[in-house]
Image 1 (cartoon, helix red, strand yellow):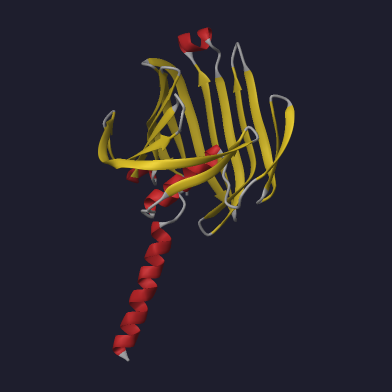
Image 2: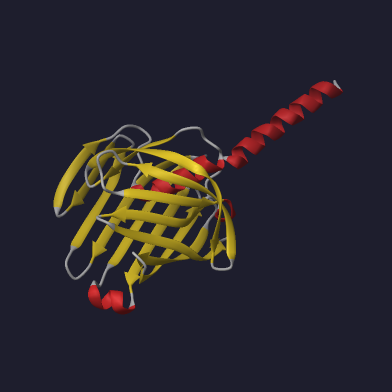
Length: 235
């Protein structure tokens, strides 16, 4: 009887550990410095919050100093969705990039897990999507969840601008990353894009709940880099 009880306790412990290991990242607020090919652009403020069975992930950046005079760039991205356990179901998504030369806005909502209705460049669209389709912001939460759980394959279906895309993300090893006076144990991830001049590299830090400590996005010969400056857990 003692052996059976011990085995039952062990199985329960392993089950609880598995749930904990694959949990969504904790609620937090953070600030990242943003630069483009070595030129400082400003800061990006990021927050993740939970309420009951809902999540909200927000990213806001605005060019400052000389960059503000040159471009006036401002980017707002946020998503609100529902979660059941570790399953993410986005509901409302917004990406809005404004500058002196552009005004690009992609906003959409999920009518159901299989249908997305939105607007891009003032044109309405409706898209039928597979189950478990994510937006670009929720993708970062899914990556944190799956890297934490050491999931073997990091493949995702993502919708943006009325188009369905497949993201096949490859691990590029464990590293120690130093940013300022802080050291982070990170997993390096590379987003593979076929026949594209764009590339994105995530450096997901264990100390940040596997949210990014650094992001490098290369496009048209320029590298946009985001580096963690401040991170605070929200209880």
